[in-house]
Length: 112
Ligand SMILES: [Cu+2]
Image (cartoon, protein in one colour):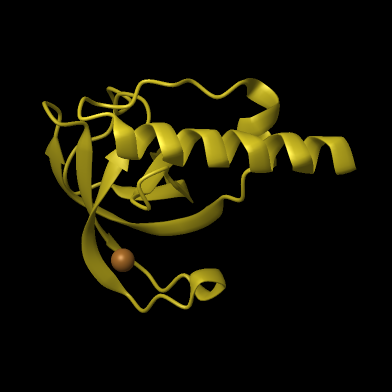
């Protein structure tokens, strides 16, 4: 586990350094082990709006105790395209993790 933690720390350090230097969209792909080691948080809420072009969704989410977040409506970045069966108005359950630029990224989303 120590090796994995070190690898993750190095990956994060490398990532943020590159992200700052590059003006274009950062396209580095993490390997599977890194993704699974990163902390995700689960939330539930209602899908309010979808911006497919920019890969973002607006969700009125319920409180997320782990993050000390109250209920609120906010935009999240999608790591992958939104599943085709989801649309505005649907109750959803989602998993988020903090991205390289500190934005919150949905790594998994589906109907609640
Ligand atoms: Cu929020």
